[in-house]
Amino acid sequence: MIKNLKTAIIILAAILLLICSSHIYLNSSAQRMSDIINSAEKSAIEGNIDAAFKQIDAFESEWAFNKHVYATFIRHAEIDLANQSAAKLRAYLKDEDRTDFIAECETLRMQIKHIAESDRFSLDNIF
Image 1 (tube, rainbow, N blue to C red):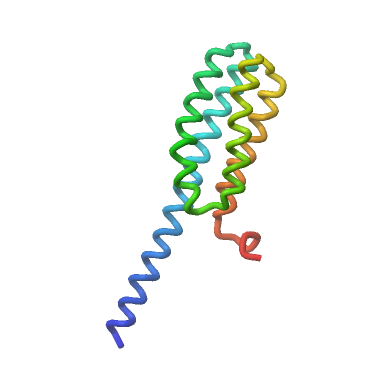
Image 2 (cartoon, one colour; image 1 turned 90 degrees about the vertical axis):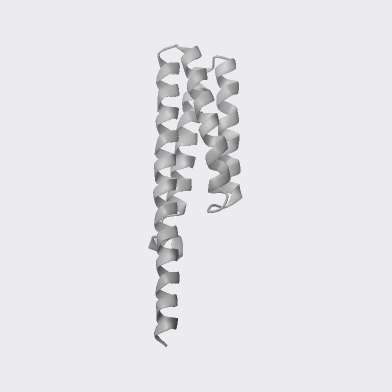
């Protein structure tokens, strides 16, 4: 009986650890990517398209790694929406369309925020 209780406690602790670590990872990676998008947006507003391209390269590198990790926690439709927005950013920069670039930066930031929040343990996500 005591052995079964210890096993149950260990399993419960492992599950809680996994939930907490995934939450921390999603939030920290989402914040890093949002910061990169903010930098790219700021560069575009200032007219520094080359710097904005470098920031988008950094974002794409970060996103390429994180989207595979996110896929274990998040519905793929959410990831697909962020992929589409990320692809538009480079196209808007190539055309030097700063207005659409800035709008798409905001869209992508909101999608990344939503991805991180959708994994959060809350009553909204349960019901």
